[in-house]
Length: 191
Image (cartoon, rainbow, N blue to C red; front, side, top):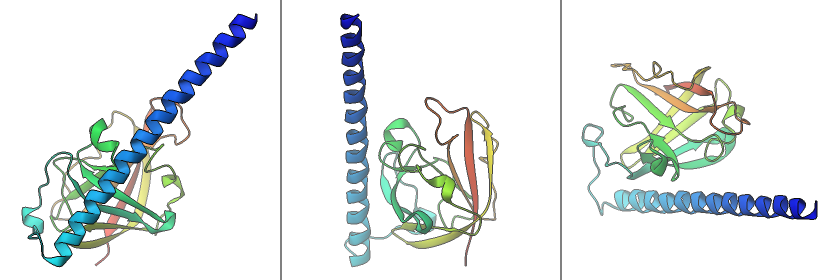
């Protein structure tokens, strides 16, 4: 019986160590992306690099491009091009093939519910989001939310010529493992 208890304790220590390592690895990746965004925005504001216009703004996969500010949560989250696991470890992922601000179409941003979007469920209709890029800051107001199946891709669609910000994360927020649903926020630009 003592050997079995010792085995469970050892297994618990190993699992906690793996979880702790992953947590610090993700924190380091987010911090690195934030550093890259800070450098990009600083160089852009000083004129050290030429700013891309909205029409020219098509970042490379994995490139840290800006920030998503969520004032309600006092959050400043780096935005990275792409939504593969490597990109999502660094921050909020921009879904490749969707628009950026001033490109007059749907903008899709995704993130993990247990890292960058841990408190996203606290955001309510009327709250705002700010996307900060090298060519400006753009504010959006939440107008709706819904929950869909995890494999429902119908939310990703052209809204041209109307701009719309869509933010997605896994749902339920407290679910352990691969969540069966997605929480979707819809926001419209504030001009």
